[in-house]
Length: 302
Image 1 (spheres, one colour):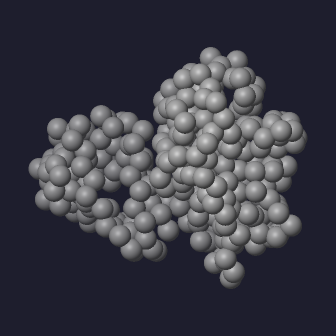
Image 2 (cartoon, one colour):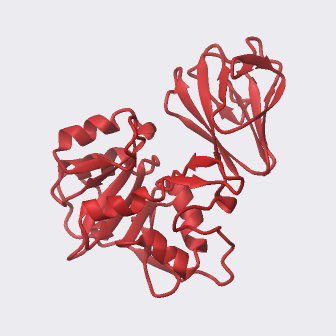
C-alpha cells in the first residue's frame, strides 16, 4: 500500500508526498519535520503526520496552531481514504491510495511476488555517440537507449506532475491524445520522432521528475493508445472503481518485475520496450518483452 498526498492548491501546487506502508511521515514548515514545506508560512514547524500501516492511512495533527482539516472538518486523528482532502496551513492535498498488491482489472491479474529472479542486466553508456545539440553525455546516452532502428518511440506523460505539460504538447506539433476520453484527462500519449523538439523538453525538464514513461513499438500511436486505455480504470477486490496510474515510474518499477509471463504479455501488448527513470535519475530501467518474464536492464547514464 502506498498513499500519496498531492498538493492541489497552495505554494507547492503539484507536489506529491509519498508514504509507504509501515511508515510515518511528519509534515511541517521546518527541518524538524520529515517532509519540510518551507514555502508555506501558515504551517507549524511540525504540523501533521501521515501514518500508513499497510491497511489504512491516518492523518494526525501534531498540535499545530492553525489546525489540520480533513474534508472541511478540523481533526486530531482521522482515517483517510481515496479522494479525501487534507488542508494544513495554506496548502490543500488530495489523498490517492495505491493498492498495487491487490488491484485487478482487464488484462491484469493480481500481482504476486516473483518466485524466481527477473532476468537483469546492466549496461553502462559510458561512451555515447557524439552529443546531440544541447544534451549532456548522460542525456545523449538516454537518447541512445530510446531510439533503436525500426521502432517508433512514444511517451505517456502525466499532466498533473507539471502544469506546463499540456502547453508543451500543444506547442510541439506532434501527434498526441489523452489516454482517457473524459474531460480533464490526467495522462496523454504522444509520438516522439527523434528530431522532435518535445524530446528536448521531456529529457531536460521531465527526466527524474516522475512525468511518465517511454515506450517503443512497431505499431502506430493509435494502436498503442487503444491498448493502454484498457488499463486506466481498474477495480479493487470489493468492486470499487479506481484510476490505475500505471504511467507513474514508481508503479512501473514495482509492477513489471513481478509479472508472470501471461500478465506481462497482456500488459506490453504492442510494445517492445518500456523505459523508465530509476530511483536515481542517473540510471534508467529498460523492460523488454521476452517469451518468459520481461527482461530488465539497468542503464547507467554515465
